[in-house]
Amino acid sequence: MAACTRNRDGDDSILEPLSFPEQPPDAPGVPGEELLVCLFCPDSERQKDVLLKHLLLEHKLVIADVKLIADLPKYLVFWRGRFLEQPITDFCSVIKTNSTGPIEKQEDYFLLCDVLPEDRVLREKLQQKRLEEVLEQQQQEREDRSFQRVCMFCSDEFSGNRSSLLNHMAREHSFSIGLPDNIVYCNQFLDALQGKLDNLQCLYCEKTFRDKTTLKDHMRKKAHRRINANNSEYDRYYIINYLELGKTWEEVQSEDDREMVDDGDDDWSDWQSHPVSAVCLFCEHQSETMEQISTHMKEAHGFDLHELRTELSLRFYDQVKLVNFLRRQLHQSRCYGCQETFSCRQEVLRHLKEAGHVMQLPHKSTWNQPQYYFPTYENDALLCTLSDGDEDERNVSEDVPVISEDVSNLRALKQNSVLKSMLKSRGSCR
Image (cartoon, rainbow, N blue to C red; front, side, top):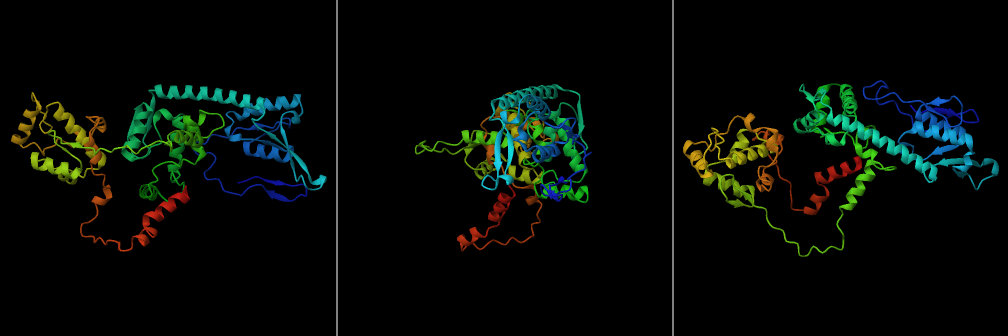
């Protein structure tokens, strides 16, 4: 809850809205808050928020951009020593409140910020020191082979390097917290996330649910299998937040985006788009659409990718791995059905037809491997034409009637479309 203080008249005054703690102070991943020393009061230590209010109310001092100070305890110790040597007015800007009112109602407040060169140098030194410590910590984690942890979404256990677990969660559970090389204090980060799940709390909207099943369904249906980027609790786990003094990750990222904005003076009138052609799996025939290339492979080679997709319930990335597997096998002049190797591609194609192995795939475990996420041919346009239909759509019963919208009035349809409502809702959430 917010702290309550007394004004000079003896009445209680609340400095900010009250709120209950979102999680108990002893929750996993939440370190105990360090006590900080007051700049003026001897032998006085307080928690961060309490100290800042104390400095404001008792000493009329405001420290600018506190959250961007790399090491607040060292920062306070430094200025405590300086204020003992010289008066505060030698360092701080003075802000007079109620300047147009009676003199007895006016008060002077002091602002300590990095406009002062000495303060700027101090903040930069603390930032540089912290960056060095964080990079050293990250390097240790990257080289650490003693990592061992169970996935928070299933019972699989991972050991060796942290990347194996992070890549597993992204690939198998569609839950990504970022590239391993962008993360620091990984164990603490995972502890914090596990603590939320143990408390039946959604990792994105942070609502609490009655049981794990309800929480799981919520995160899946609402696409909340991600963390809330606006939650500053996670900032300490990303290297980007340590790189530049006085900038948050949002500001750094927005600057990167601005560098990519096209120059308005560029002339694109001579731009010519060339259709991307997908190459057949078995020959050099090319087509511009998935429908055309599928028809060709079915008629010319007896290979029906649509039938395999339906029969094996292949999701998009399953199809990607299958195509890359087939490409590699045929490139190596090997029959993918029986694994027999031939001297050239033409002999493989002849064998596939004569032995009836065109539609004979090996067990899924043979081609459902991470190595086949990577294209066999770097410019394989067939991968871009694969169907990305949602898995849930394939499970819809065929006898469910589909009622089309009335498109006679397109203007009214656009104004009242579900998509527009969803975009508005998403924008307001942001």
